[in-house]
Length: 131
Image (cartoon, rainbow, N blue to C red; front, side, top):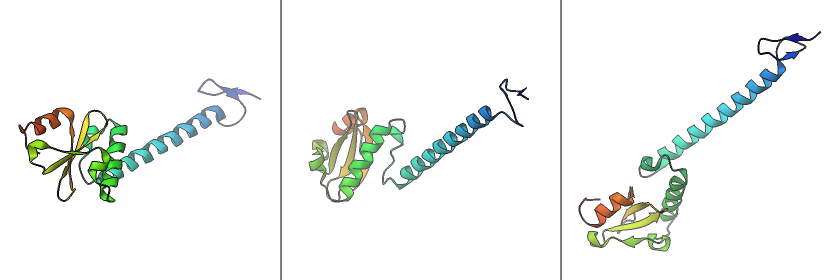
């Protein structure tokens, strides 16, 4: 005999199988979301520089990590459209990341310094702010 459950669904059995399936799917989605967040935190912890300024821009973070990996594997920043900053007397190299961000590297060692927005980059390039 069918009965009406507290959720409003009708069926036979001890509980509403429709709601149980929905809850199971929601729990799986939540677990996947939490796993993705943990993966992001682990990726951020492994970064050689702080990329938190683009935390909300996953494509920019992805591109910055890609450039950092290429430079650490031996690709020169000039091969990645990098250029030296004239105001730094050749001590800094700048690699564009997307349209609005730049990765700064020390020229002799190719050590990454930081990721800057184009506003900060313009201030550094005009020698108003030290890198």
